[in-house]
Length: 382
Image 1 (tube, rainbow, N blue to C red):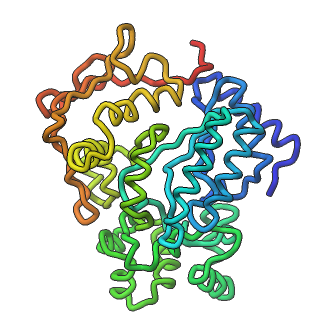
Image 2: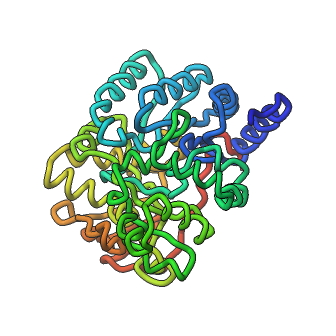
Image 3: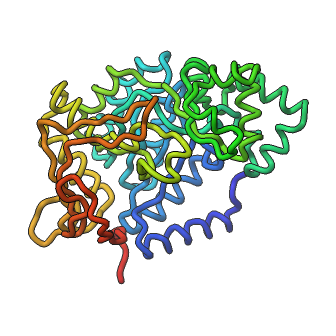
């Protein structure tokens, strides 16, 4: 539901408090619950509260597929109304039927930038996204949180309705499952229930066959049985569009992934290969091999550009007086090795890493040093 005026005032106060405590801005994820329930006016108010302190509004916009251009219009409207710097999470055109929309998306953003709107974006260098099976369900069934969602799914009549909507979609929500093109384009990566973990690494089609169920029934039952949203990979984008996006100078690069390791608890689940390979993939495949952009531009968009966008003080540049966060790599050999089938593989070609001046990787070996520090936003005062 919409917040009451008093509730919205309180929400804005919390944003302002967070900015003073070191937040870099306010973010929204409008495809997913609960972010999908926020309307435009609510988002403008929260973005405006952050903008008072030079905070960034950064958004996983309301659609990356069938209503991509409409979702961009909403994002730009928020940016204008709140008079705030704005970034789009993980620029993309999702779903084969929407791949042709990317030039219009880029053109609209560049027109907005030409008028003075401060808008940037980020991306990862893969044609698949990582999310959860919750992105296959309509918004209404997820209202109230996980317990309410599962309680509804146990009602036979509601379950039948949900099954129909999983297969057909709806006008007021976006299904990453349908955008992927089918169960063969979805890989299960994270299941909490030990009894279900043998399914990790299978496509949804393979899992459904193993369980002797339809893909739709498998989606519903896995969410119930696992007690989670169920981590998955959805194949959504085209390689041609990935290259187009890499060429855009106002797009920085991200992994959109947790920090992982090839040992211990991390091996109990799978992951998207971007968790291990996103940046080495950019430098090895798209800079050295395919020459989509020059090395110096890639470095800037891995370092200085995101640091500037987030207003991280004295970060992102090799400059006197700045923190010495330094990666030494071999541009002739750096490459990613993680795949969708075998994601737990480190990239190679990185020789040394310094964090705040202390070596954490030396001659390709971890030193066990932990020199990291909290970073704070532009309004923080100690």
